[in-house]
Length: 68
Image (cartoon, rainbow, N blue to C red; front, side):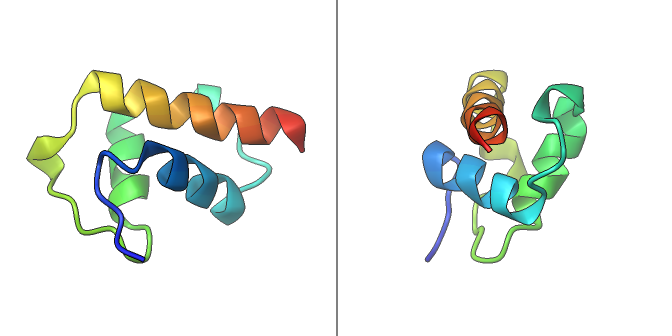
């Protein structure tokens, strides 16, 4: 599956699956960008990302983290 920056739910879940014990509230946005871009199937461009998107991804990841 191809992931773009607007795939925030899929990205958040993929990050949680990759690192289920990592607290997403501790990550800097610059590191979050790197983690997202390293996901298998991610095809988005770095310059198409913004803080609103990163916050949405982080909140989805946090929701999965807290439910586990």
